[in-house]
Amino acid sequence: MYDKPITFDTFVRWLGYGLLAIAIVCLLNYLGSVLLPFAAAWFIAYLLYPVVKFVQYKLHVPGRVLSIVVTLILVIAILCGIGWLIIPPMIEQFQKLGDLVSTYIRNAAHIKNIPEAVSQWTNEHHQELEEYLMSENFSESVRNAIPKMFSMVGQTASIIISLIASLITLLYMFFILMDYEYLTDSWIKIFPKKSRPFWSVLAKDAERELSNYIRGQGMVAFIMGVLFCIGFTIIDFPMAIGLGILIGILDLVPYLHTFALIPTALLALLKAADTGQNFWIIFAMAVAVFAIVQVIIDLIITPYIMGKAMRLNPAILLLSLSVWGALLGFIGLIIALPATTLIIAYYQRYVTREDEETMEKIAITEENTAKKEKSSE
Image 1 (cartoon, one colour):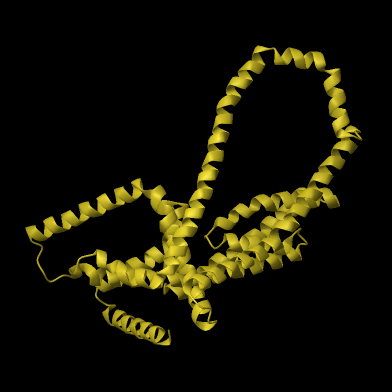
Image 2 (image 1 turned 180 degrees about the vertical axis):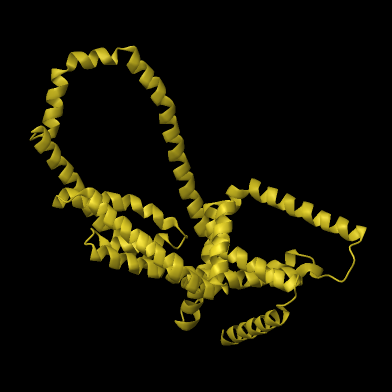
């Protein structure tokens, strides 16, 4: 452990550090809505920077601004291609669902023209409708509906604010990419020289673990998408490929793909109405695909790929997911693997001191890589 004794001055100093950390956390919590677009922009810039470098230095596109523009065009083209695989088939399926609902209403109620039937019913019940509109029940319903209308207006305003925040995020991202090298090399200067080595090592560790996590989770999401495409194709489920791609994209955030059960239920209802099969059988088959793929991912794919990427034993990996999920819920599942890896790394570095040689080798390797990149540029 530590050789130096803990004196009163040391205790006061660490108490001050703790209070300062609490104050910083409170300030970040207070300024969260302002800092969130910047944090999101930095994360997107971190993901796009290798592509920008490739476009600028390997494809010899002149200038950083033009390289960023070309990169954004490529990313938008890829997203549009994915959207083309998902959205038009989904719209077609919902149009078919609307046609089936209209056909069912006509056959069940023996109505050939729905608007004409509505008009006829209104004329026949004109007196009852007029009495209801003049009644106390209608006034009470209006009074109850007005707060909901204002709530809807507030939600619309929040959507507009979110769009504005998205534009601000794009501006942040553009300017961060413009001076990415300078910002990543100079941020350490905000700390005193004495503490810069610690923060520099912390940043390198965090970047390394984040990179490993993104690569590992991306591979897991890709495999999950492929498995769902195969499973839905086997059971002849509607929009099998598009739905599988959508689930794979959602799984880039762990366990977010469970929300895909909603469109899955709607597509099962559509197939039941279109083919005359039992809805519960179709939906049960789709849920079985979800269950089988989830078991394969959780017990085989995730422990192997993420364990290898994050250098964690599969048992420790599953335990970390359980512990962080119990502590922080859904957010805990997202940060479980990188947070556990960082904690273990710093325990080995500063408590057991077993990882010093490994860290020195990693630092030397990273330094050599940085020198090669600068020489190639």
